[in-house]
Structures are given as C-alpha cells and as structure tokens.
Image 1 (cartoon, rainbow, N blue to C red):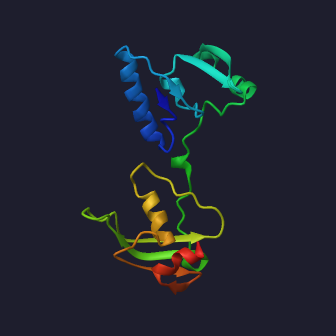
Image 2: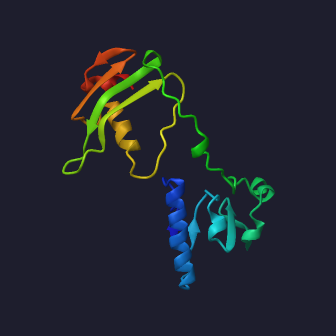
Length: 171
C-alpha cells in the first residue's frame, strides 16, 4: 500500500517508481496506490477506484481514465506534458537582479562540494527552480535564505552587498 508515492518526485524519478511498481506487479504482488496525481498511472494501473466524501463512487479499469472522466469526478489531469526541454534558458542581467549570489561554494559535511563558485540571479516575478531529485534545489533555496552556511560567496540585494547571515531578513 503506497500513499502518494509520487509526491515530491521529479518526472524521471516517477518513471523509475512506475518501473519498480511494474516489477512488483509482474511478480504477482497486489499493489494499492493512493494518489491524486494521475499522470503516471497509464504506465502501471489496471483498476481504478474513485472516492468522494468517504464513498466509493466509481470502480473500473484504467480505460476509463479520460479527460472527461477526470472532469466528471473533479480529478487532476491524467496527462501532463514534460516541458523541461522547452523552458527558456536566459540569464538575467545583474542590473535586473533583486537577489544575486556570486562565487557560491557549498558542501554538506564530509561530502564533495555541491556548488563550486556558482552564480545565481533572481529577478522580479516568479522563477521556478527545477531539476532532478538530489540536484541541489532545496540546498540552493536554503543558501539563498541564509539557512545553510556557504564556504565562499557574495550575496547582493538589489545590487547592494549583504552579509549572508542577514539574508533571512530579506526573503
């Protein structure tokens, strides 16, 4: 029984999870997946049970999983495009940066550096930080908030240099 096993996984890791579950299925094991993310079900699910307000309102095979089915039961889309290859790869100009970091070096204790003299600039608006599980997204976010201590690097708020210990005051 797996309760939202795809939560917090990137698309590649969800594919790996689906392959692992498919191996269990091939071995004759019964697997129950409790989830509201449906886009990866086509790979492994044989049967669907839909619940609403504590009641089972549908039971059937995965062929029922269509766009209209999802709309009827208020479910998330069952197909999601992976847009990672289509995202713009523009580097913001330093003059546009609200928060920037230069020459950031960071390593978890006893490990090789995760970042070596990396630079990052955050401009006005919404920025999505994406990548594979374990690629350093959360660590970078923690560094930019001042929650993780860097071994080297400079930080700027609207072009003004700031002590990394004061970052949390600005985020």
